Image (tube, rainbow, N blue to C red; front, side, top):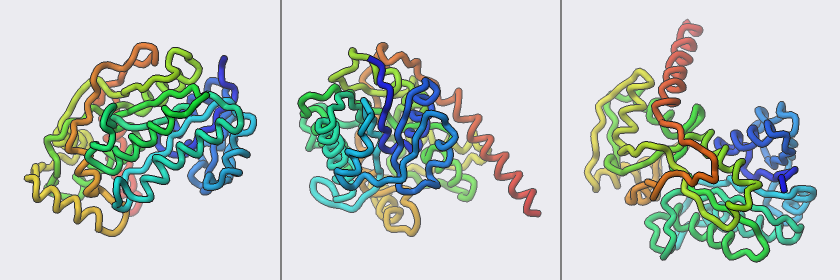
Length: 320
């Protein structure tokens, strides 16, 4: 049965915006909660989307949001948080407690369909052995979903996601605009970036497909790169190619610690450094039932990175 109303938690984020737009294009009603309406301006124009200025910290809030919905998609994820064992409180709240509370809200309100967005690299066995707080907390969030009785769940594990508004390639492009040299920790780490539109479409396609119930899916692009290769491509495609210095292990640790403590949004943390100790590569192609042919990085990234260059040049000319 086709879900007619979906609660998209985290729907104002990078991936969430694409998921919500595709659901709306399919004439689905989508409820998107947010405490900061300015983050949802782009969603207000979509005809079937209801942006609700409500938090999700209280069970009563979740019950009110889920009323009338027949599916929930949890898109919430964070990359940085304070330290702790097995992970800090921010990771616990976002990756473990929120899925638990969403699952309980579904069960209280008779909603069976649940899609959880996790991460590539989460181990299938011995989940406590994951090298980073990020991966350990994602693993425990998956376990919460799997152990729920009476839920038709699907778990998605995307690799690092690229697209016009990403914080990945755009960050490396920006660095190379201003730095003459890019010192890079974990330069040899392998990644298999996946296009944001492909991840969004896989979620939408899986939503009403019973074949996906009770399954976990890896989502990755067609090509594997080292981190150094991706940084070099971001520089070249953005018009600011720079020399990349692959840092040895100890210097890489020191760089991660320094960036973690630097003011402003963290570019890297010690936990990110630990996550990159395992290759972020899928075990096989995207499952055929998801109906997605993965988009190559080179088919999309050069266009939006070069547009970023043109935009910056136009801004500079306008301020002359």
